Image (cartoon, rainbow, N blue to C red):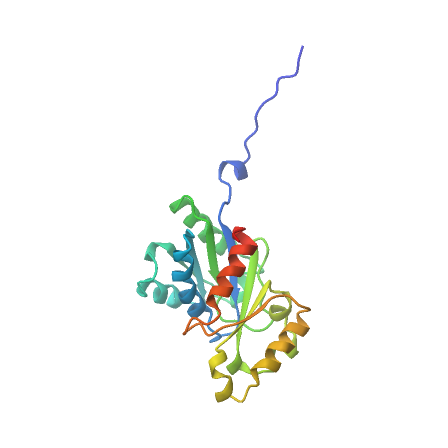
Amino acid sequence: MGLQLTSLTTSADANPSVAARIGIGGPVGSGKTALIEALIPVLQARGVDFAVVTNDLVTKEDAERLRRSGLIDPARVSAVEAGACPHTVIREDPTLNIAAGDTLEATFPGLELILFESGGDNLASTFSLDLVDWWIFVIDVAGGDDIPRKKGPGVMKCDLLVVNKVDLAPHVGVALEPMLAEAQRVRAGKPVIATNARSGLGVDAVADAISAAVLFRS
């Protein structure tokens, strides 16, 4: 008597995660939300179907900012209130963020990309790979040109380091080129992109990196 094969369907098969998930972290005021605001029209122009999850301590401030911006359908912005240090819900226990991403995928079938913005944290902030496939860490020149030399885990371990607010360098006594060279050195050649999110400088390069790394588009 021949064996009868039964098709088994796992919960993962029944509800697969389709959208690529990218983390955007960095210190308070480095320009994480501004970078997302700058990326939104660029990704839209490229035909990317995406949504955003923001994280704040005990408010929905960043989510409301994006919803009011007019740049994106407000329903495509979800908010997580960490209620603790921001790294808790992106690294130690990312359950709330995973659930927010799953809800967005269920609401918008065909979603290709979800951006997870961390609450403002320190240089030790990193993302759990249970939550994201790839992640960006944002620093800014106003924070000091010694940030790369401090070699925090955020700077060292991220897939892409963004050095933002480069327009402020001459106003805060930062020598930009040495700062960028130091960032390249400590990261052993891993990508570093200089940006001014307000003017759009470098934003296309960030979108290019996202497209190549997680959307597999040239």
